[in-house]
Length: 128
Image 1 (tube, helix red, strand yellow):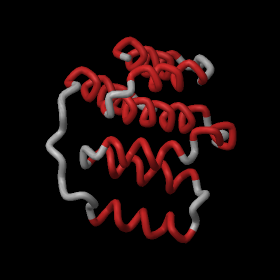
Image 2: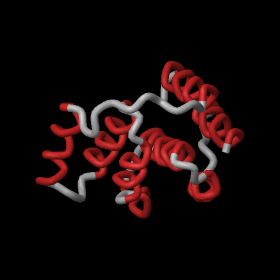
Image 3: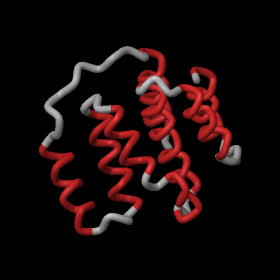
């Protein structure tokens, strides 16, 4: 996660206000969903669809799709990508009114070694 991503996450959590929902599925989300229908176990596609839903303010859909990969996090070799996945999943839970579950998921992730990743995790955890 670069500094811009960390700043973006901080801003989203700080605002913590409801996002005006866009149509139920954007064209970008539909494209990823179609690809995911072809390869339903692809963690990258699961994360991409979750990101598209979060961008549109559809937190419950984001949470539902991201939960499909929750117990497969160890398959994501890159610690930064794994943390990015968990942060999005936690944020989706938080915005769906499930703060306890978000905190529970956050606790399952090992503390990142890199300082900037640890700051990103701690920033979200403080608000949960």
